[in-house]
Image 1 (cartoon, rainbow, N blue to C red):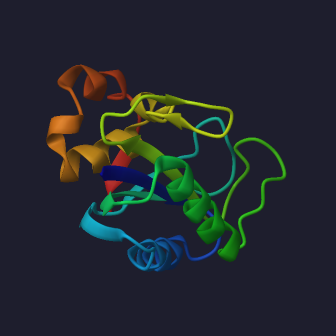
Image 2 (cartoon, rainbow, N blue to C red; image 1 turned 90 degrees about the vertical axis):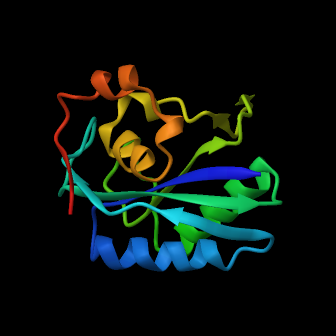
Length: 150
């Protein structure tokens, strides 16, 4: 199954943490990296703290979506992720954005990610590595958000 994972961080050495997280995802069982986007910088949205560094990773995996999410959350934990409140600044944020064409709505997981189409920091790197997964209308919707490849 093809899946897309959003990566973000705005605490500590964010670029190093994202690079480390990609290597951890590469090491997941039954999972192989297909493509990785460039890094993108953006101001926090509905949050505070320093600017974020973001990227999107495309993987091929035999893990089910819930198992992939659990694995991603373990990587976040290893990176020191804390969740003191919603949208708090973070050392690492890993979001399962898309899992093939699956539509998943459960108490632990919603795919497609519920806010991905509202965020330039998701759509720009996703469009870089998988342009067929992002429409022109979706890009127009986030056109006023500052997000730059770095």
